[in-house]
Figure 1 (tube, rainbow, N blue to C red):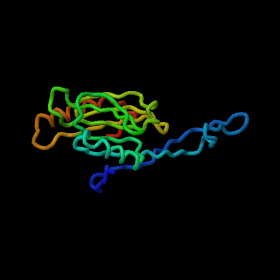
Figure 2 (cartoon, helix red, strand yellow):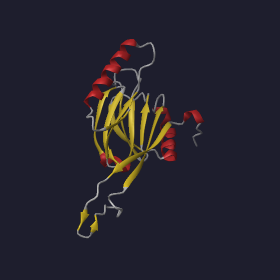
Figure 3 (tube, rainbow, N blue to C red):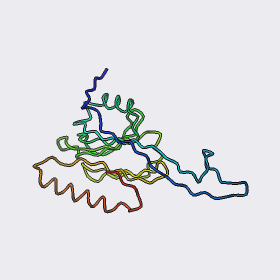
Figure 4 (tube, rainbow, N blue to C red):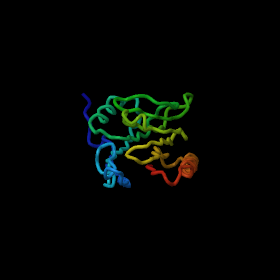
Length: 183
């Protein structure tokens, strides 16, 4: 059994995504959507997003699984994973897309985005930008989202900090303005 201290829990944000759908009047009255609600009503979807600096994911896999099961977060950004290379793997009921330093370097930095496994088919694309920046494009709650997971360098690493912000700015500039972006 893993005992979690309050400071070990991730920072979460739960928000409502508002979607307005226009109605059309057919021969038999108002058009109904798949859930048999009137289409001209506003529909709200709840999206639960969290971030957590794990300071090395290898030693905390069991703890991460416990948190994922208890909190039921939709999208989880995990920083300082210290994973090497790039890839994806299944953890609990989530698919985790991660990037880190090359295999020949000392494990440091690294970032991952974990998305509910039942939303796996909603992932449109993902990009490993740098060992501190990862981007995932997903369509949920009738919206197109770009989720950007970042792990900024610590103070004192001036050259790495400059490189990080240049890479981040280039990445943000490429995202179409009509997409909702979570950073």
